[in-house]
Amino acid sequence: MSHADGSPVPFTESRLETQLTITSADAAAAAARRLDHRVGPLAELAVGDLPVCFARLRIQLGRLTGDTYSTYALLDMPDGPDDALWERGKNEMIALVHELGEIHAWVCAQGCLLERCDCRADRLLRQLLREARVPECIGHSAKLGRATSIIAGHFERDLGGRKRYVLVDYRNNVEHAVRFHGGWRARLITDAGVEPIYTSHEYPHTPLGDFASDTQDCVGAVAAALGR
Image (cartoon, rainbow, N blue to C red; front, top):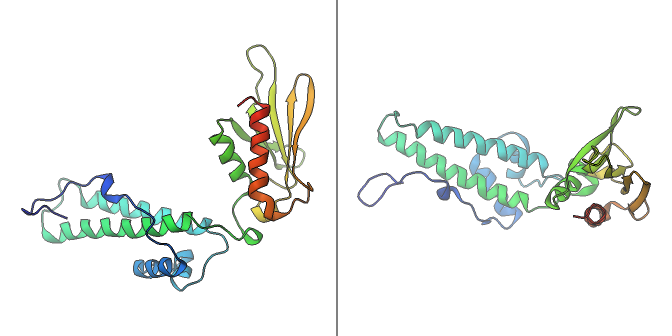
């Protein structure tokens, strides 16, 4: 890319800003075909097969985008050869990043088929807790040898020696896929004892279709209990 006088336009992040220009599965498939990536979820999208879980496709697109940034940085080194082919390569990498960004924006806007989704069930809960400014971490059971809960708030005692945190139990391993979701059970732990603050509808057999709203409601109860 160059100015009218032929001088190059400096590369800036703003030149790579992407808007959601892909609005349909057909458009996303066409963009994937243009990238000519022949393996993995992107190749499946290129032939029109939509994934039941978009997580792996987002991961692949993220890796490809990282590779294109790295290649652009290499081509943009100050001591690189000053010739037309080198400049053409830089411009092609910018175009490729735009292509990847458009597909990535579309993919991130899609919802997974929860019954077959590979996304981890705890990730939405933890993301929403962070957005609510609630500290969180995964709680592991030494007896069961697996992650069984999310600890919200500060597990350590405060300066006054008091404890106050919320334990969010999950029927399965909290790192299991969304399709195994059976609901949340949150309990406030203090020096005074244990107080139930949230239990999902029909826990531990909460309908999978309630996953998103159930998780939102759980986070609201946790944040309120911790005074957030």
